[in-house]
Image (cartoon, rainbow, N blue to C red; front, side, top):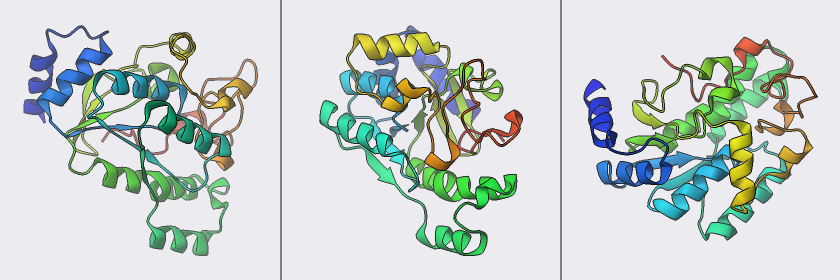
Amino acid sequence: MKEILKYAYDSLKDVDPNDIGSTLKELTNMFPSAVTFSSSFSYEDQVITDFIANNAPEISIFTLDTGRLFPETYSTWNSTNDHYNIKVKAYYPNHGMLQDFIQEKGPNSFYESLENRKSCCFIRKVDPLKRALAGNSVWVTGLRAEHSPERQNLSVVEWDDANQILKYNPLLYWTTEDVVAYIRDNNIPYNILHDRGFISIGCQPCTRAVRPGEDFRAGRWWWEDASKKECGLHIKQ
């Protein structure tokens, strides 16, 4: 792990950290055919997709189709494919695991307990993510420090021990205003739910619009304590 991080830091030392396009290109030089990006078609992910399409199109792009996404998210997925002439690859929940979980717990059991909700997230997101990351060396994400208290101590380049992969968070220190301005200035397709008060967009049953004065993360799993609002994709071990 330390060797990989050192290799990445040494290779990127002459690259301006604010130059995302150059950093993406350097990562593909360091790890040919082994850099991948996970998109949920959020504001942040649309910005990164634009950087990839214009600077390092060899980076693969995938999404986790949980089966319970908003119709607007699927529309954004389609318009993104058309806009950049790409085909974002989808990974789906394991059929057997999902079937057994719903049979035992019910389709909306995630409202009943934190344990059920985390089990649902594991089946629909964490397990498919591990399959998507398999064989890759670098995982590009749209994480930003503003997303949650747990994400304010992250590094732009870090080691993800849970997935045994180097993680690159290019927009970590971007503000929401930065992201929205980039979307607007570059005419990038985006999820219209953002215009309706949705800041963080996940599965439809677990996401709502944020009310004036509420915390950034209030719209996700709103029935839970704020300190527990992670799905498991970015949990450090």
